[in-house]
Each structure stands twice: as structure tokens, then as C-alpha cells.
Amino acid sequence: MTKQGKCCGIGTLTFQDALNYGAILQCYALQESIKHQGYETEVLNYASPVIRLSNWPNMNARGSLSARVKSFLKRGYLTRRKASFDRFKEQCLTISHVFSEAEFSHVCKRYRKIIVGSDQVWNPVLTHGDLNYFLKGVDHPTGKTSFSASIGLSSFPEEYTTEIRKLLLDFGLIAVREETAAKEIQRLTGIRAEVVCDPVMLLTREQWSAIAQGEGSIIERPYVLYYALGMPDKSIIREAKRYVRSRGMRLIVLHNSPSVLRGCTSDNSCDPRSWLAYFANADLVITSSFHGICFSLLFGRQFTCMSNGKNRDVSSRITDLLERYGLTNRTDLGIAESASDPIDWKHVQKMISMERSKGSRLLKQILEL
Image (cartoon, rainbow, N blue to C red):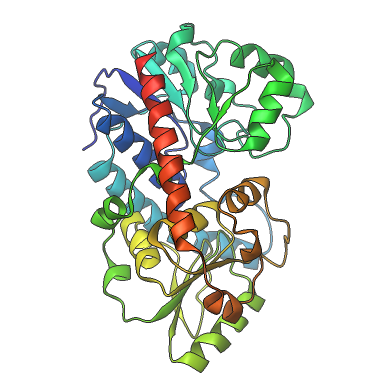
């Protein structure tokens, strides 16, 4: 339940306001993991202007009639998605009152400790240089920590390095999500940051299944799930349709676009619990999403990492993730091939268990600082 304005010992700072399934679910996972350790916690409802506004198209933008219509349609489905996310936050997150950049340092003083992360909170390109995610203006070092924070870049942009270095040196403990980020922080500060799993990996399959519900839990099986972060790739759709037709299966496409797709179940605004259920019950997952891969692993689903045709690069965070589990061969593996190519689930479960144990130990260390 949302608790407005209540003081709390532990505050977490992340992208709780993004209309992104991975972002909201990692936020939930870190909250639950802190509570499991016996601490009260709440999510800082920081109103980062850039992140908040990035969810919405500019309705006042000039352009062709076609462009304005597309903007109108996009706002329509994002309004529905926001309503779903707001319900999830109301029911599943303990979250502070909304506060602005001007109030940031003052509000942070109410907490004994603040944990920054996960997600790309330390990507200054993404946040347009919003250094509050480095706890700018917060002056108690033992209370400044991070867990699974991600840069999302191979290095910090040069124009931010001087201030970022100063801010990171004031942290009591730094834990990041990727080895790439750890190397960059060591280069910049001399600090060897810990590398830990994304918070979603801290919860078990059973814990995630317990909150998964909705359309994905009752839809007729078998089905292939394609989760696209943006506009679905047409070539992947065509290949997936051929595959499901030949095997009498269904195709479900979850995406972030106003498009209405034909010949499949198309969903661009499901709530986070239904999103989980779609993954939990899929016979095969196609995705280029970091968290899409995480949940495929957690639910034990066959998957292939197929990147969008407009951007064939696989990000370092996905490369690091696949290497960690010995699954680099899942990158752009054909749909039919990925369905039949066995995954060593015994090894995957062993690795998840090891990472979960390491992450839980480090989180305990952070909380006890």
C-alpha cells in the first residue's frame, strides 16, 4: 500500500516512474528483499522531469497530420499502461510522497540510508545529467550506497566525469550490475565496486509466480511470446507466425507501440502482473530485453535473444548476462532452433542460486553499514 510522507529507515532510489516492466519489477524485488532482511523501506518517489516526461509524446509538437495522429494514439495506450502501473504501485509498493528536484536533498535527510539502483540510474545520457541519482547534496557517506546500479554505457561521458567521481567517492559501498560498470568506476575512482545480480534475481520463481496473474495466466496454451521493447520487428513477427502456424500454437506480442498487430494476440498496455504471467506460461520467449531474459531464466522458459532489425547491436548488459549463464549462443538463434536447442537448466539454476546468495549477503552488508 502506498504510504504518503511516512519517515522510513531505508529509502531506495530508482526509475519507479518509468512505464517499463523491468524497471517496476526490479523496484518491487529490491523492496521485498530489504523487507525480507527485516528492515522497513520505501521507494523515493522522486519526480525526475526527464524520466517522467519521456513516457509521454509531445502533443503540442508541430508536424504532419499523420505525425500528430500517431502521437495521439501513443498517448492513448500509454494512458492505459500508466493506469495499470499505478494500480501495481498502489497495491505492491511502499512509496513516498512525490517530490521535486528542489526538495531532493531535504527529503533524503529523512532516511538513515539510501540505496541507489537498479536499472540505468547512473546513465547521465538517459537522465540528461540528473546527478541526483548519484545522491548529489546528500552528506552522510555511510548512508549512501548502491545495489546493482547500471551505467548502461561503456564509460561515463567526459563532461560529467569530474562531478561523478567526486560523488562516487562519497559512497559507503558501491555495488553495480555489470562488470563493465565496475571497470569504469575503478578507472574513474580507484574503487573496486562489487558486481551483483539484478534485484529481480533475488526473488524465487515461486515468489514471482505468487504475484503473476491476469490474462497471461488463463490464455490458451501453447503459445510463443515475443516481447519487444519498442516497435515489434516485422521480420521477427513473420518468422514467429510461420513457426506457430506449423505447430498449431498461438503468438502473443507484448510491445511498446500504438500499433495494432494482426494474426496474433497484441498487447501494449498489460499490467505488470499479467506481464509476468505471460512469461511464466510461455512455451518459447523471443526478446531483446534484459529483463525479458531474466524472467525467461527465472521461469525456466526456452528463449532466444533476437535484436531489432533497426539496431542489431546487443548491449553490454545483455552480453554480460548471457556470458554469466553460459548462454551466449542464444543471441539471434532462429526461432525453430531455439525451441529445440536444449538449455542446461541444472547449470542455470545453480548459477541463479549462487548469484541470489551473493546478492542477499551483500544487501545484508549494505543494510548493516
